[in-house]
Image (cartoon, rainbow, N blue to C red; front, top):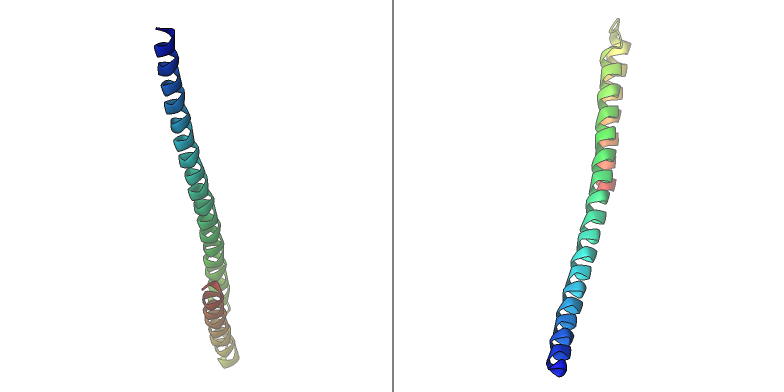
Length: 94
């Protein structure tokens, strides 16, 4: 009788140990997944800040008064620089 109860307790302990191991593996997997998502969020935040800066620069360029040909040329050059910088950032991000 006691021997049977000890065997039952041993089996129960084995099941509990296996369940704990399974939960630890699942926990580690979820931690890894969370770390990856945090990195992804950081990358998206950087991209968002870049986009916000691009909008600000575009607004500044559009607010430059076009009084003569030189101002229009300056605006076009700045826009072209912005486009080139965006291409370089995109290339470096890949």
